[in-house]
Image (cartoon, rainbow, N blue to C red; front, side, top):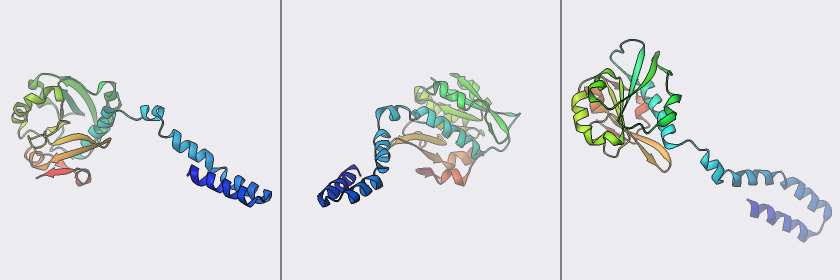
Amino acid sequence: MLNWILGKQEETVFYGNRRIRKRLLIRYFPVLPLCWSLFLGYSPLTLAEQPSEYRLKVAFLYNFSAYTEWPSLPGQVLNLCIYGEDPFGENLQHLQHKKAHEHEIVVRHTKNTEDLPGCQIVFITRSSIDNLSDIIKQLDEMPILTIADTPGASQQGVILNMAIKEGKVTFEANVTIAKRNRLKLSSQLLRFATEVYQ
């Protein structure tokens, strides 16, 4: 675009008519700030302000909870359990006490599989993925939404598995396991999945 503007300026000089030159420069001058804003839009400073991977994944956790139906929800809370080393850090503060299905989301941390049956959502961190098969067996047929962000986790029985592709968060869905656990994933959610196993 900048070359195009400069080309227009050279063209006006070639004609040598002051009045035409002034009109054209005035006409295209307002476009220059736009060019600078486009260039600055790709500066390292702006890129540094982009949300981090796990801040984006927190937003996905909320959408997963909002677009999943449980057969019943005990009490007034929706327990989201982070199993293993927490990769989210302070980003989970954005999720704490938000509401989904009129239930308040309560974030809990645990490294004990015995705590998991008391959760409605379990995020299995990469630090605990070696224990995945045991976790899936323990939670089998329980109305618990399992989530991970490890390659191949959906094929192993995790219901929703997130990934990063070309800088964007994507996810796979295992509908077979969701049905076995008596959970219903909204069609609005599934339409955005990159892969649906059923």
